[in-house]
Length: 448
Image 1 (tube, rainbow, N blue to C red):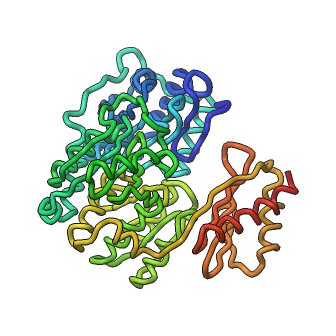
Image 2: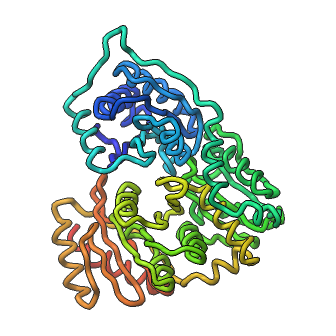
Image 3: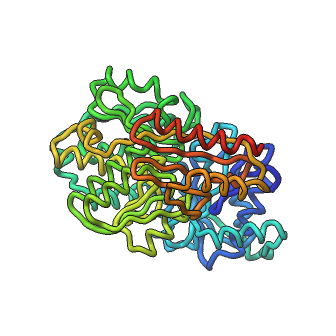
């Protein structure tokens, strides 16, 4: 496991260095040992290394006596739908999400069609580290079948919860930047079904990214002109496994990944009521929207499994993470760019407003993110120092240290994979957010 980036639901690394075929095979064999009885659905994103890792994953699962269902190249949220459809024991998504092309990874899914909870993920890691595998005898090794049209069940689930007729009546002109990831075909098919005039960039799922894969403002700078030139009313940009969505308006203005979840929440709360859940690094826009609608709001630690755990515990109406990952329980408990596209188009159709006008109605905040080197042994001292310095703030230690004021907040979290602390600050203006983040950096720098 040396050098692998390990989360509560899987692992990532540079292929051929940290992430090897042997590591993949043994990791999924540990998963197979602990998962309940039944087949396991396996899929991947479009990275060129995915096929090699797929073969290692299948070998590990078959050697452990598991039958598999191969779903090919599909979005990560689609895998969750398939796990439920086939009543599978779980799923494995081969993807490194937004990481650079030299990376790949494995994400584990539970039988409920969600990423595995933290406790189960830790059990898999312990089994891997201890070399605990249950290899099947020669006459009981597993076999593989292929899923027929794996994308369609996902599309059906989304179309069942939005006003498709209202969207089709508007015939929106939409530009979709799939960036040669796994979401191009599913995105095109969804937008076609919603009656949109679709322009797809990077629709071929070959992993040959035309710009860095994380859909940030910097990485999508060239997309702004293409949105304007195409005459599109809205631009959508997915990450390689299509669980995150960024949005541009008709002028090419980057609305940001934080705005994706906020637009979805604002729209859902226009017609329905219920608890809303985000993680503790997501914009306060969501809390403000919940308060305005007089519905409960809850924060989880950072990480999709934690958000889903809290959504289930609170019977949440909606949730997600501010990295462009909306989670609609009516479709599935997985971050989903396709859900985001459908809900934002529905909001435009039902209100008659442009996405720019909808975004301008949202509470206004600016987020700044940075980091500072810090050894794990100094984290407690660092957080104590910050808490003492900002004694006028409301503090909590749910995940690192979060400090809240009426008009701003600061989150400082130690990384699980490198000796750094991540710093997130949000305020009404960017200078105020930068100043708050800079104060945190100065306070921690003396501990380096």
